[in-house]
Length: 331
Ligand SMILES: C[S@@+](CC[C@H](N)C(=O)[O-])C[C@H]1O[C@@H](n2cnc3c(N)ncnc32)[C@H](O)[C@@H]1O
Image (cartoon, rainbow, N blue to C red; front, side, top):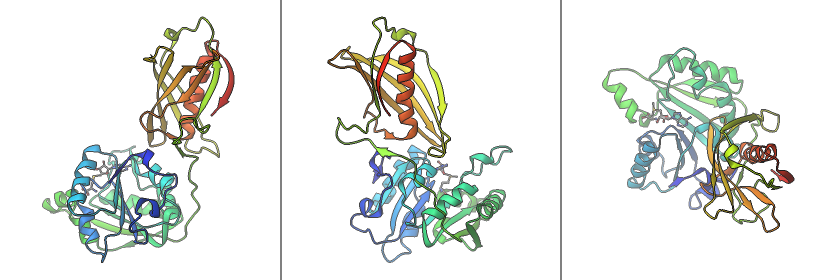
């Protein structure tokens, strides 16, 4: 089953995601590509474990979903998201039996190592979300990345590497087959937590089901009589990177549109928080008393993160710079 970010709870639970099989082991695969690993690996268990697959390619997502459906693997959730925010915000502490990474993108060019997944902060996050006895399973054909990952695991201070043969299923993926045909070898490591650090979830919330819920970021203000939406120009604001919001945010206000009802406007904003990107709409709509409500719209299934709250603040600040009198800030 395919889940959008907004379909998850923050954090979620195996009991909610796999209501028919909550007691089974829970395995997460990062970058599943066309999904060949899971049917082979699941078949090595008496009963298919619960599966959470995370991948950033939409084409791969659809291919893998079809493959798992045809294999009858119904206790599988697939999502198109970068791995780190998904693991940090959705996966509860101490809940996974394994995190599988087969043939991660090696980012071989000098200066690109910061794009690699398997760096010390990832290992700390992984150790916090694994159960005692769980492990990160890495298989790769890239010797330099393999050594890099082993060094990073050690630098994390929470992982011990065991070098073993890969599970046979890891040699059935699209990339494994490609390398086998070229006669190249692969390396495999099991990274086992030596302890489980506390890595907190962020302050992330679902968009509330009730439209009037006060938890939706909003502001109330009075626009000046001479308000000129034509004065809007795309602009960028940055913030966060505090103790409460260590990831930090960038908000780009992109476009301001007149609403179809002609009683207000809609701002399109791009919100980047680490690897997580959301496009959100923020409405500016007239209220009965002559004031305007600035409020995150539910369109597109946003989740409420520090950056999304900040986006409502950036819109409010821009309106204030245009002469609006702000009465209330609820973000
Ligand atoms: C080299 S391919 C390997 C695919 C598959 N595991 C295999 O062995 O055939 C790496 C995959 O990781 C995905 N990927 C890269 N960065 C990712 C991230 N941060 N989170 C999730 N998937 C990611 C890419 O889209 C790509 O499909």
